[in-house]
Amino acid sequence: MPLLIQNGEVVTADARYRADILCDGETIAHIGANLGAPADAEVIDATGKFVFPGFIDPHVHIYLPFMGTFAKDTYDSASRAALVGGTTTLIEMVCPGRTDDPLEAYELWKSQAAGRSACDYAFHMGVTRFDDRTPDLLRRIVADGTASFKVFLAYKGAFGIDDAELYQTLELARRLGVIVTAHCENAEMVSRLQRQLLSEGKTGPEWHEPSRPTSVEAEGVHHLATFAELTGAHVYVVHTSCEDALAAARRAQQRGVRLWVETVIPYLVLDRSYAERPDFEGAKYVMSPPLRELRHQPILWNALRTGRIDTVATDHAPFDFHLQKEMGRGDFTKIPNGIPSVEDRVHLLYTHGVATGRIDLQRFVDVASTKAARLFGLFPRKGTIQPGADADLVIFDPGHRGVISAGTQQMNVDYSAFENWPIEGRADTVTVRGRVQVSDGKFVGTQDHGRMLRREPTHGN
Ligand code: URP
Ligand code: ZN
Ligand code: ZN
Image (cartoon, rainbow, N blue to C red):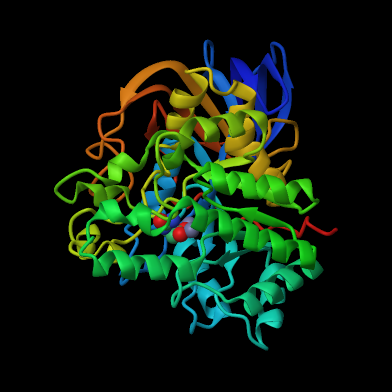
């Protein structure tokens, strides 16, 4: 059935205007003033509302065996959570263990999503080992439409790779024209600091940040950038948390390294004091890199505004407070890392970014949708509103007022890091390829509507 969205204010990364949007099938057919409704069309009145392109979260974990347990969401819950939060496309990290077969892992991750996702999705392929078979296997995975890799410079003994493996991964990525996303923290420094703190009896969640100081993250960024410079690979620094890491990224860009920067919503609105909350409550706020001192927040917001940060993701990694975060009581190094936020990213970014005047509406769309589409080979199918693009649309009510709570969230996790936080504005109606999946802020759609998005390499030099 055709879908006509009338009288909304269309906002893309580079334009803002009043228009009607006619969707036919899965794509946008026409944009213009006073479009007539075809006889059989569903009509939505968007008067007083913004119409944004569907938001893209380029860094999530859904299926994730990690730190002795499994992340709590499935595609059923995570994709519904994404949609009610305005996100229509997820890019998930495939994270094989070092001894796992990469191709089997890739198929396993795909099988978790197939037929269970209500929104569209794609993958970054984690490279957690590099041996003689790896180039051939990665070529096959890229040919299947997964045209980006992920490496971890942290998590020694788990996902982390050594320098020889990093070099070979970047070299191959350059030859294949794919971008490499990277978790940048110096694994050796983290492991030494962890042991030192524990030996001093410093075992609570408040010691997580001191075990991974900003210098450790900045070293990771500089390390990645040096390897990217030598190999010519294009790289993307995930979850950047602090001024020092941003400075290392900037220095690399200034000497010509092709490097892009992501931050994630927790760093923009939370700070280190949350991980210092008493009675082990701080464990809810343990992620890596850690939440930083408050002084880093305005620096991140400013970098978002000026374009020095390219994207805002979540690094959604949901672990229950009870039973899972609990595993690290008495030893902060065993607290499963992650702050669930796939449902809250867009609403928090609007509330704390747009409504406060820190970023304007177009920057908001760019960092939460368009830039990720461009970097990861999805543009212009995703990330914008134009004829021929997928009809992924968010009709957003700026007048809505609500609160975030674990009691009402879709994410399958027993707490919210943002419990009782007010939000301004809400994704009222959300469409995925022309189908209404969210109406009046509630999931009303089809659970298996989501499709895997196959992407071509777009990072040839
Ligand atoms: O704390 C985090 N970030 N958890 C998920 C794994 C990762 O590092 O991306
Ligand atoms: Zn990470
Ligand atoms: Zn992550």
